[in-house]
Length: 252
Ligand code: PAF
Image 1: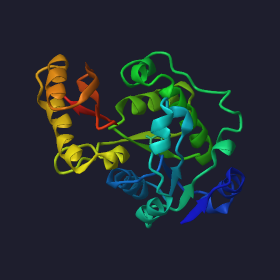
Image 2: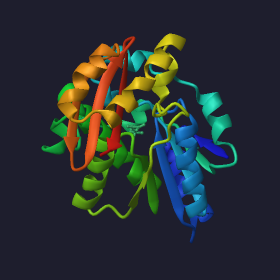
Image 3: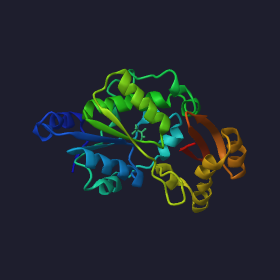
Image 4: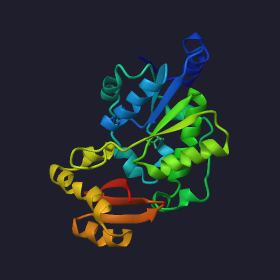
């Protein structure tokens, strides 16, 4: 596994013989890798000759600076977890990836304003912009995204179509703990009691007769509710517990 911090060095290798005639799978992440990321990497490994992992805590997608500051940074452990699954790791510094100071950005004007977007202004501009930069740098045949971030997945897919990006966006189903909680880097910030309480989130989303009915049930279970919404046979939700924001979605 080779780790690249410098974009220039990465680009020289990407253009060189290591990649010639070989298919490339790409998994973009913000690090703090868990079994959900491992599943994305394993699928990329199975479907491509080479696998590239990016680890970049993207400042432009954090509308809340506190959330950015407490986001876990665990590079050594991330590299250990991806051993055997990844050929190249890209961890560019922010000033190189945002050489333009974020004066250029991708804005979607419809889906990005709803649900997550309504609660996190500017979030999806940051996500789409960094994903476009990374896709251009990696030039993958396939890029892998988890269904837990359902809106992100739709928006990335839409951007790839809108701009004719030469990459296949691959959907990977949500990985869950045995008790149903969707795996997320944020789960690590819950106390043991909160972690048990959090189990109710996906259960209520799944079992509630309607999106509206889920809200008081979630509140009674101790969550602050940002939204619950039904859309195209999917129920999407975001809640807060112990200052940690959790999102999930279930098929209806
Ligand atoms: O899902 C994530 O971890 C991030 O939003 C992504 C796609 C890596 C962009 O920073």
